[in-house]
Length: 426
Ligand SMILES: CC(=O)N[C@H]1[C@@H](OP(=O)(O)OP(=O)(O)OC[C@H]2O[C@@H](n3ccc(=O)[nH]c3=O)[C@H](O)[C@@H]2O)O[C@H](CO)[C@@H](O)[C@@H]1O
Ligand SMILES: C=C(OP(=O)(O)O)C(=O)O
Image (cartoon, rainbow, N blue to C red; front, side, top):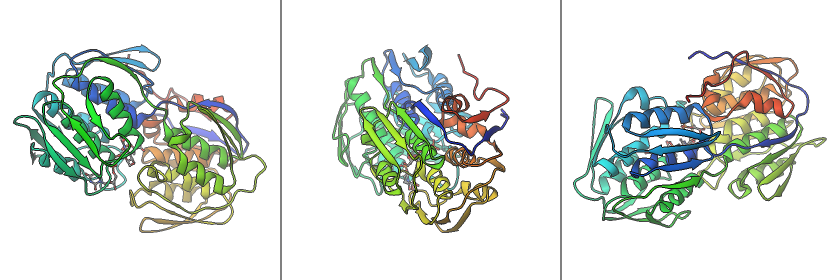
């Protein structure tokens, strides 16, 4: 669906309180993990995002029936797997859908899943997902853009990931959770989204040890029961609003945050000169009347500085006096924000995965988001400029930020979108 662009009028400070949504990237695998149980699962803290509606559409095709039972609460029930095939039309819309491979394999013994889509700034291989499943005893073949996985008996054995992968760890965990084998995953991701998935699975009776460490031991169980779980707060959304506060020289109070999930981001913002006060699950970010300094940033897997905040940080640094160097070795091609920020007067030169940013005030311009976090970079940049910045590509923002225009208005931003940002599916 073609959505109307977002119009933002910036150049003045924002203020007040904003409730951070629960995590998109934790919610999606947890929704998928509900496929492992025959019983009813109730989830709280599910953000109303287009990615959530997309995964629910895919799950419906596989046999899950869902109902919204509150603004952000959902019941999921998969008494039977009705199809073991996740087709291209549904999987190509988003990256996270690829982990249905492990989940259907565990529950039904075989699965066919199309190669994933998602935010496509460059290659996003799934070789580690496939190698892990093969090493644990599954047969995985590729044909016509689909992966077919089958197991004869339970998965068992050890796999050492060649690099840290969040999705690869999710897929292997889901594949190994049912059965009677013991699986060890070495060099597994310690990302908050992996820990949340493990805590959810264990709350249903799974036996997974080592959450938050690089070695996970999964003892397969015969079945998972139903249950109720609340997803963690979204650290990427929190980081986005921290950067918005800094770029607009505002004071914002963020609620529903886990500062312990944001250590690298908090440290960078403090180095820049932003005042950050932690108060339990609230965080007060104050950049009023401050001389902010340019800083250098390099992305890393968790607990390092997240690649999902690199474009937003680049936009912020493009407005600060001084020279910053931003490097994103996690996703070297994640640079679609750069040409659009150039349209707003940013001085950014790119060499490989390195951006050298010479800060200067930006000006309003029509721009287009080509992926989710590039879109976030653009609304941050737009809110620093006087005049109207018109941001096209709103469908990407809808993937990751719930009721964005309304919530930005709640902190005093002048934002309008002629039509609603997202139609609910219920
Ligand atoms: C839905 C979701 O949760 N998406 C997040 C998840 O994506 P996703 O799980 O896809 O990202 P990964 O953690 O797997 O990717 C990390 C790095 O490993 C590489 N790699 C990954 C798998 C593989 O089989 N082979 C391989 O080479 C990737 O190219 C990348 O360089 O983590 C990324 C890194 O924090 C975030 O940017 C995404 O927002
Ligand atoms: C890139 C993201 O998501 P995905 O991996 O689904 O494309 C993101 O959340 O920033």
